[in-house]
Image (cartoon, rainbow over all chains, first blue to last red; front, top):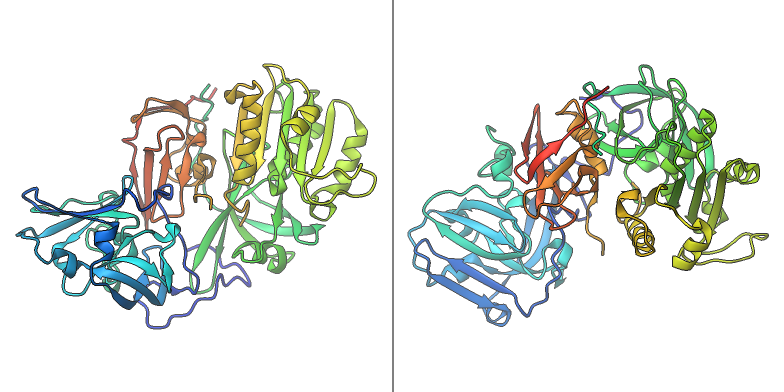
Length: 198
Length: 251
Length: 88
């Protein structure tokens, strides 16, 4: 740890009921590993590809015709900020996976560009994940992943791929963009699983 | 040419704030004493690290504003309303307080005082800080390399280093300074305002030969538009070195 | 809205924690498009879980870096080579 800087406290932080090592924020920091995609809704598609290669796809109209839910969740970023009580509207992965035949155990979320995030398929189901398209009462802004992003709030936020375009169902685990470079393969904030070996 | 030098391991040093100088209503220069400072080249920056009592810590980079001067360093801090670090540095840090920093960092955006080639410096807002280090180093080193600074700022109220620039502008000897006011010009400057566009840049910079070294620094949008103007008027992109401070230009 | 990247210059300090050389002035060749240039000219996306330095030509990652407690991970596959000047 560095020397203490006299009189420095940083942005307002409090412990609240947070996972270990996290601090509370009231703004919504924007983090991105690459440029913000600006493509419109015309070519937008979300695909679920099974381990046998079968593709289930929705264009924007088909996606928005699906039943959606309003949810309020807490967000925990591996860079240590947490934002509580965030409001989203999205389509549950349970809805999207309904009718998809698979025996795969693993999933890989793919976004526009080169970003990917992996997680067990079980962590996308049973009310734990959404493809979210509205945040805080408005269309999801591009900087926060709009038009639609994956939202998996029980894991660190890097798993909630912004600008998501699909999920691949796999028989084997395929580490994603950050999981292949030191970040924890699973990423449970309550067990502080930030890095390999945690 | 790859000029990355092989250097020693970089470690955190503890500097002390020796003095403060107000530049504008929202910008201050910190004068730091840094025991163990290895010296620097103008254009290089340092990383500052702040740590709160609970262990929370954050880092920012700041361009060095001063010419090399033993163990003394100057940083010019622009206060940002929603900044996390700049309010601490510009308003809380007091004379005698410690400040952790490491550096100097950077081998790309640097000017070597032994280089005789003419130099064109173009800075927007707080982008003038590393360029001022180059100007100050030219003066301190006795270099005769022709050097021109074009500094774009909103108004007299936001102008950094005002008195010093006036003295330099009046001094001649191969060093020239032009300030471009984008919002409001002070009396006596002809009242001309507006962004630094192609025609204004060409008029101020004059003809550029193949040997001129050009440094452009400031917010990303400013740097990109200036770099485009220079290359569209025939400057080889490899002659133009840029340092972008990001969308807002600061911390 | 501008994207959240700064010049590769800004990686000077973090890379100096790992290498005893200033890599920002080193020359490298992008494994994606073949462009050569100094790493300082790359686009450093450092408002992220890690840092991604992208080629200013094709946008592919030149290098990626994650700093964990006590160790740093680096992926340099995006660079076919780096050329660093020797001192003296």
